[in-house]
Length: 359
Image 1 (cartoon, helix red, strand yellow):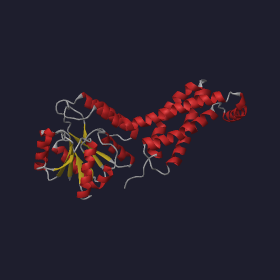
Image 2 (image 1 turned 60 degrees about the horizontal axis):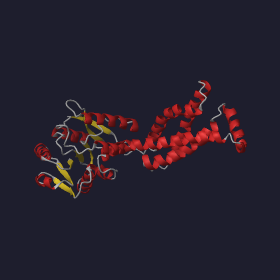
Image 3 (image 1 turned 180 degrees about the vertical axis):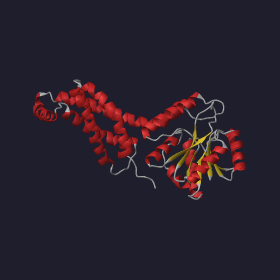
Image 4 (image 1 turned 135 degrees about the horizontal axis):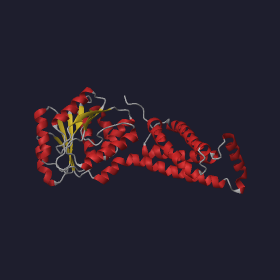
């Protein structure tokens, strides 16, 4: 078992952890000095007597430090061994590191998470931050992970190169790791560990606003593309309704009215044209900017989903206008979009841009 510890500006707590690991286990330990200041040199000098220490000349971030360790391990250790990542600030107990390591040995194909339950005297920002992230992660992936921000994780050395290829060099790397597992059907298993906070967690280098944005930007990207495409479709629908009223489009208006009479809905043609246009835009934006998908069948899958979701959307408009008597198209489009949005998101994540199951 190899323990990876990214360290930025560490103190005696790192050395205490290394001594306890040496005394209580036979694990190999790899520490990464992530560009710490000169005053930390004595800490790393002693650490080199207890572990392998790799160095970054400048601070590159927690994610980059872990990837440096993973690349080193992939080159020097057997693929059947396990990797456990732990923090350098004294908040992961050796007993919990051992429990996570044992769980990894029992389930080498899984990503093992050392999950805190946030009992006792926990800083408010840590409790609130994890609750928000847990909620956002669940609605954006459909996977429930109680402690999305834990740094105590484990997986096999066979996945080391795979983990090196993930995006993110700072705290966003850890959420990208979880997203990678959900997209590739890698099971995430949780092991309950002690919740340890020293003081007000002042040793943490997590920047609340900057690093929170990095964590949430995947979901925010989807929301941004969806809002943009919704506005595009919304105003295009209204614009087409106006255009169909112009004299030189009398033939098109007649064709539209014939469709309307057949379907008993006078909004069909404008909404259909607008939906096809916005769906094409939405597909390309989500494929490239949100899901980063290379799925060769995603276009066909998206088309099937678009038909299903448009059918639901059209049905909601029909009910609102012809059964409930709401006549303002600009108004009834809003609740219809709000209802179909989560359905569309879930289908895109689970079906359109899903990757094949990892063996």
